[in-house]
Structures are given as structure tokens and as C-alpha cells.
Image (cartoon, rainbow, N blue to C red; front, side, top):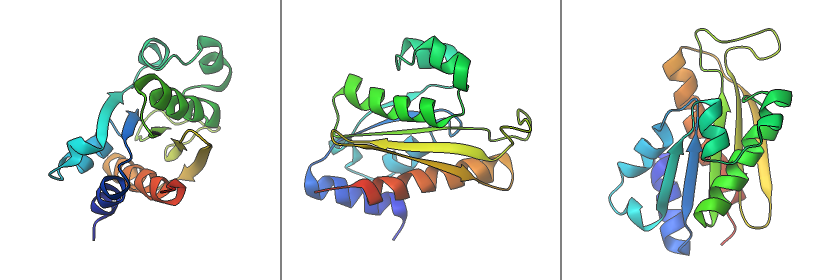
Length: 156
């Protein structure tokens, strides 16, 4: 069974809701989930917050946090997940931010570096991942890992 179907069944069975804040995946997780009939029962909101400006205006990430840590950081991923969940009033918030490449990498933040966070009312978990491959492969690995983390964080 595909991971997106597992997530859908899990959320439908437990009547939990989800909001997403995607950056480097550009809506890929949203697309994976909306390919499933009935996803509107759990997938309530999605935001593609690709720019600094969108992270500040829509997700309420403080500019000083972005200036200090950069968009690709544990701090920003954590706030993205917490804020998308809180602002949009869902049971879970999932956030993904990273460097998909092939350009944009630096020695401190190389291509393939991705932070994925899942927030619930009780806690926030954040993973630092290093993926390899093409831009598309990195984005797909990020989307799949985000859904895996959501499953791990789920409490019925």
C-alpha cells in the first residue's frame, strides 16, 4: 500500500485533520494526498510557502528567525508546522523546507538538506534529512519522509 493511502486511512479512521506547509516540495505532498478520493475529509488546508515573504506573511514566521537561522533550518521547519496547525486549526501540521537543488546549496546547507516537522497539539517532532539525487528525487523523498513522520507521530 502506498504511504499516502496509509495516511489517508489513518486520518479518516481517527477523524483527525491535517494542514500542510510545503516549501521545497512545492505542493507534492498535497498532490499525493488529493489523488485519493475522500481526502477532503482530513486534508483541510495547504500552503506552498516558498519565499521568505510567504513564510512571514502567511505562516507568521518571525523575520528575525529567518534572518538568524535561514529558511532551511530546524527552527523554521518547527515553526512552520506549529503555525500552520494553529492558524488553520487542524489536528496536525506538517512542514517541509529544504534545498532541492541542483543550485542553491552551500557548504553549510548543501543540496539535499531537508527539514521535516510534524506538529500536534501535544508536541512537535522535526527531522533533519540528507537526500541524494536529482531535484525531483529529493522532492519525492522529502514528501514520502514527511508522510512517514506523520504516521510515526500519530496518536489516535
